[in-house]
Length: 114
Length: 111
Image (cartoon, rainbow over all chains, first blue to last red; front, side):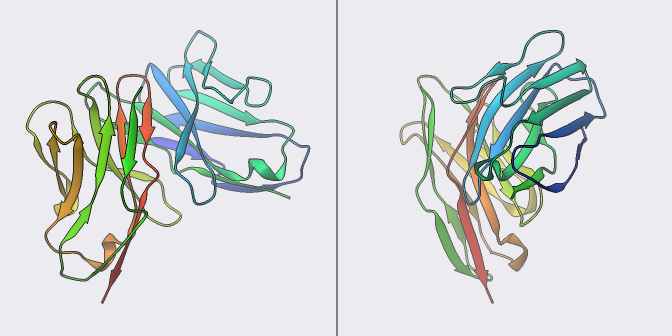
């Protein structure tokens, strides 16, 4: 399966600022996904990032708040913009290496907004 | 629409006793189903997956799950719990482009 390197692993940010999270995969993958895990809760899909096209956002998530880049088949970034304490969560990227293989997740970025 | 229901938010067992974590799914077609484990301050690890082959799926660390279409269930079991099994477990339904996560079950293992 693919190996994902996600960084930063954690950060404490001031409200109103932005943080960019990076996700690097050791293999070329078509689809990359970004999830949010709010404290004590399950994972929710933010968006799907395909190389060469605009990201597809799930209901409740918008591009202005969570802009995503996907410049090539091994890399993606998620930016959390104009942060507020409600954005404090773990953010995870994920890839599907091959159909039927299951999804691989990065180790996550634990974000605290103060 | 797909949905996943994990019937227990917390399960507590003694070390050496069986583990049962319950999951029901809702889907208009036979989904792919997964169990993931999340240890504290660590990422998600795939335990096992069902993709319409054998209904009894064996995973890592002695876990297994049985897909029962008539009951729309995909319960996770392990014959003997180990202290290192204490973690959060997620039942997940999904296909090629989207995963639906259950709310999670926190497993506590006592000596």
